[in-house]
Amino acid sequence: MTILVTGGAGFIGSNFVLDWLAASDEAVLNVDKLTYAGNLHNLAALSGDPRHIFVRGDIGDAQLMGALLAQHQPRAVLNFAAESHVDRSILGPAEFIQTNIWGTFQLLEQVRAYWAALDASAKATFRLLHVSTDEVYGSLAASEPAFTETNRYEPNSPYSASKAASDHLVRAYHHTYGVPVLTTNCSNNYGPLHFPEKLIPLMIVNAQAGKPLPVYGDGMQIRDWLYVKDHCSAIRSVLAGGRVGETYNIGGWNEKPNLDIVHTVCDLLDELKPRADQQSYRTQITYVTDRPGHDRRYAINARKIERELGWKPAETFETGIRKTVQWYLDNPQWVAQVQSGAYREWVATQYAQA
Ligand code: NAD
Ligand code: DAU
Image 1 (cartoon, rainbow, N blue to C red):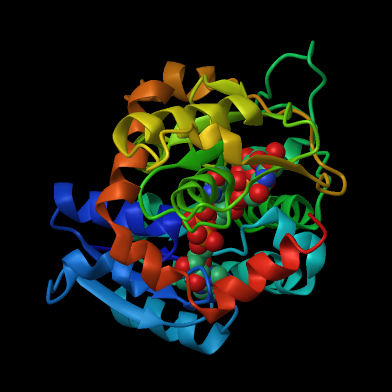
Image 2 (cartoon, rainbow, N blue to C red; image 1 turned 180 degrees about the horizontal axis):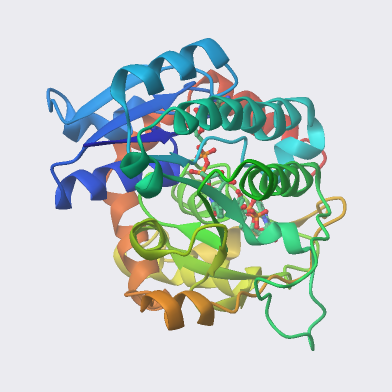
């Protein structure tokens, strides 16, 4: 048996592939375009492992995806592939429309044709699991209850709008054609192999490099944080037992303002790798221009997945963030490798008016 994972060289996808093959001998066909966010070094531990088949490719390439499905006959497709960074979607939305909407549409078309031709028993057990985000629900006021699966979609950024569109297409392919889909909407992930354009890894690498720690606006925007390995275990649970056509919210029950997150990272670094001058890394915090259209608060009600599938996160924020900071301290070569010329160009553009 084989599963097909798209975007498996990115942050969450590579953690998923590594965890999957640590627990199972079921092969993974990993299709990734290797954009700036895709990194084969993430999968170095699988080098020479016949259970991992890597193909560089675009989910929007209908011919390639159709041929791979026909050749490998996967019993499931898990779609992690996406453009994922909100700030990049503000500076250049076109790639987000291309991959997240058009690419997902092309993938759905190929999966529909493949699934329709399966024999009855393979057809009954096949699943397409689409990995999505809590950002599709928009922004919450401080007093509002956490997002449930029945919240209205109100995406506010080009990124979240493109993910919302892809979720709608996935839903429609189930409703109209009967494709057996599952959708997960998860909160902010953090952990090993996280590209340092996102808040937590950016703070860890900037702090150590003696650079400013750029906090957008007043730093009081709230996110729910989930350790990436917990997201991976939730996806495995949904794949194994989720009800076809349903969506599942995934979260860590860890709502925190950004400033608290940055303080926690600084305090852990103060403990684990103190600055030579004995000052706190907190002194590097710099308030910068806010993100346009910045969502104020996300919060996830993850009761449905707990009730139906018995899934709960294993890590608290305190245990997960300590593991994460330690991982970055232990893997300076990974950080150096991802900080290529393209990465430096992005940082120079994004933080130019700071
Ligand atoms: P990422 O940016 O780290 O990785 C995305 C991967 O997709 C990269 O390896 C990239 O090369 C690949 N990719 C991009 N376009 C592609 C295309 N057209 N064809 C094939 N591969 C392509 O993203 P991530 O943080 O790992 O997120 C993975 C998924 O999870 C995304 O769908 C994202 O929307 C969703 N998600 C992310 C978070 C989070 O906090 N990071 C939370 C909830 C949901
Ligand atoms: O909620 C799930 C989403 O979480 C995923 O769908 C996205 O793919 C993922 O990137 C993430 O989106 P965010 O915009 O919440 O993550 P980011 O790490 O970019 O920012 C987290 C918060 O920190 C947000 O309020 C913006 C703020 N921030 C971010 C950066 C990069 C800063 O204050 N300074 C920064 O330099």
